[in-house]
Structure formats: C-alpha cells, structure tokens
Amino acid sequence: MSKLRILLADDHTMLREGLKMLVNAQSDMECVGEAGDGRAAFRMAQELQPDVVVMDVSMPELNGLKATEKLKSACPHIKVLTLTRHKDDGYLQQLLGAGVSGYVLKQSAASNLIDALRVVAAGGNYLDPAIAGKVMNNFARPHRKARGEAQAALTDREEEVLRLVAWGYSNKEIAARLSLSVKTVEAHKANATQKMGMQSRIDIVRYALLQGWLQDT
Image (tube, rainbow, N blue to C red; front, side, top):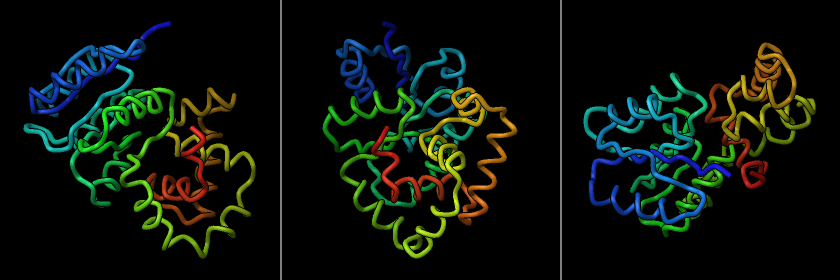
C-alpha cells in the first residue's frame, strides 16, 4: 500500500521540522517536500504532485489563500489542508471558496492534524473540532427557513452531485465516480444550485454542514 505524500508549506522552519517528524512517524504517510513561502509551495506542488499540501495562511511572497487559488486552478486533484492560528469565520469562508478541503488550528492536538490528513486524502472535508460547532451555528442562521424547501426540490442525482462537490471532488472526478459525462455533472450542479439559490462553493459547503454530509466522509 502506497503512503500518502504530504507537502508542508509554512514560513517557520522549526514548525515545519516538527510537522515533518510527525508526518514521517505515521506508517501511512511521508513528507515529500517543504516550502517556506506560498510561491515555492505552488511550484513544488506542481513538480512533486503530492496527495495533500498542508498550507499556512500567512506566508511571504504569496499568502496561503492566493497559493491555494493558484494550485486548485492548476492542479484541482491535489488536496489542500489549511493549518493556521486564525479562528474567525472570515478566513474560513475565503479558504473554502478557494477550494481547501480541511481547516486545522495550530493550537490543536497533533492527532487532529493526522486525522485531517487522512480524511482529506480520502476525498473528504475536515473542520477543526474547536471551530466546527461555531461555524455550523453561524452558517445555519441564514439558511434554516429555506432548507426544507430546497432539499425537497432536489432530485436524488442532484443531491448526489452536490454532496460530492461539498466533499471536494472536481466535476471531472464526479463524472468518473458516477459514470456520467462532465457536461451532465455540470448540468445537475447548475440545477441544484439554482433551486437552492446558491452562488458559490461556500454556499454548498454551508448546506452540507447543515445536512451532516461532511460527517459521513
């Protein structure tokens, strides 16, 4: 069984060394590279093609948000896990919109990061337990009233596609998984988001949180 290939991106050398030791101590993981800034992280991710990039938010040259946007555009199959000290929803929403699959606080236990890496590598999404409850409550407020009507309006296939989008799969990956064409997937996604009044991936993840879909990954 091949190991999960992890690229670490953080501008603090001591933290990277600690993360490298933690990752390499796992029997199913290996650190394949380290980057000290966002620009290097983007370049190395393209070259090394890791399964997951652990990305800090505040880095020189190119911050984690911009690096994630560039990476997900160039290599959508590579998963990005944010590792940050920021707890506020603003950062989380921006990063979810950029395409991250996980969000872990630097203050958390090392076991949370390892759990997150495995979940994200398997195609799931992960929110740090320290912020998950708060995020769900905040996301729920503007959507409680319309949630029942929106869910009832979705066909089984539309819900299936939307669930996979929330889990972080690209349209191409969803098409392969469901034996559909990419155009058909795009049509189901467009129909579902139109019915539910969604404008972005953030809205899809919000709805997925309310439905408990992210807990199934």
